[in-house]
Image (cartoon, rainbow, N blue to C red):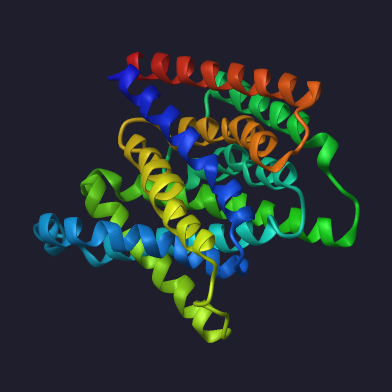
Length: 291
């Protein structure tokens, strides 16, 4: 089972890493990109969830439903802030700051889920944070516009941490499909209300942008985020959050490959530190489950 979990998290990392690339290539406002990403995923899941999960939904308590909708609202906030940040600062700076998630999971976890961070996990979190800082250090800018982007990315990290912690509270009471459909659907509804209320354009995009909307819904959202939500049933939010920090490594590589962003020695070194932290976290989690 441990190998299966690690494989699932690895697939999730690779899939989620495409999100920043697709968002930067799409020619649409950030909130519209967010709404189409999560909306596409919800539409794809709808026929499966509505036919297979009706009995589960009938058994949900009001408290469970509230927590799922709250998780969806936090997911909507994550996408709204993080994708917007990509248009104000560099991909590396945005991805590093949004992936401060382990810090916030460590701070909020004991209060929301009762999951405490052990010494091994704390050390792993420290390693991946250092590695992430090294990856993005050369790209941090000091302009006012860049600082706005950095602040939005940080807000995206906090909301993502709360989204994972909230999901941990209800994941064991629903199937994976049942949970992600309600969660993603709640996020999509919130984002679309905001987009329409602000009068932002929702049509008239290029063929490439429409393809990118579909790709974002299927790859980083359904494949990537769903892999993380699947793992939440078996491992702590701390390990999932640490695994997320593989994104600066693969995201930097994709940015180098497709956007021409430099692949420096510092980014390679930071990537190695991130990988070491993820390995340490997985070993610590395995040991804790056996104890």
